[in-house]
Length: 410
Image (tube, rainbow, N blue to C red):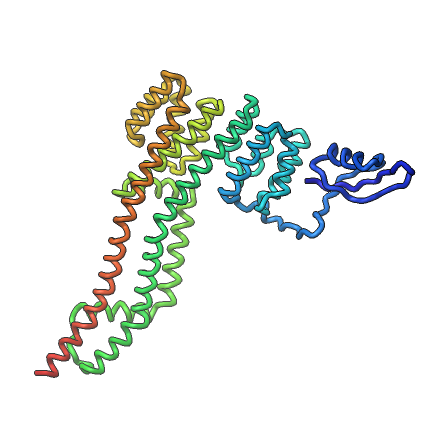
């Protein structure tokens, strides 16, 4: 919603001045006329609405939550499909949005469209909210005059993608918590518990007491960590941060994605996720009327794995030279055979988007099964690892105590 400063006269020629909020200038003029007044002056102001706090500039750069974006897309689709003018629909969504960051972005999109810019171009200026898939589908929908239908497809595609991300994150949460607890427990035991136990053993057995090898090793590790904790802990944290930052670089990301595709168990899950994203995104773009080459380029960026992204880029080059996409995919070992077979059916029948939706549904179900199976394996492995660490420490403590007790009895 925009705010306007107005000056108008009534039937008695008395002048009234004030502020009014409206979707656009035409709506503001109509609102003044409904009061029985004749507009004299109407200017748009940039002031904040009364009772609101100015939004900090960093909100415009903040990434929008997927749930907020899905809700925005569905509401916009419903309003456009009901015949509501685009500007009025965006103005209403800006007013009633629960996301401060999205509210700011929709306001900027509104102004750009009001200035004559197409919706897709206005959305493209905000990549933190609207990715390439979103803007390309909207652009195709505008060109074909089916924007409401395209927005429905977008909302469905976003919901599916968000659901998959949540499931993967949920499956990885418990193992990550166990890893953090294990590392914390190891440092805690080595820095605080083992030294105290070592002192007790030395007090009982004397300085010349012969300790088991495992106990000597644990005490040596503990003494080393105590002596150089100010190097070890910052070094460990720094190494983790350095690795995470390296993975975010293009080269590091490619190496990491290549590596996880070689890890048994994990590689199958990653492949199924990538194939599901490919099928869902490519089908949505093809259904929107996006050209094959452009759809492949956009889909490659949306798959989330650089190895698959390169494969799709190479496929786009071969398609450009006249090859069939199904034949190209069939030769690539990254994609399961069912993908190329279904693509071939889609190319023969002219229903590639419909066929790939079925592929996406199938692999999304496969992802659910794979996640459950992986979780059932990871959890006991982590528990055994933690138990083994605790058992090792317990053995290093109990062996010398048992030996000392036998000496006392003797």
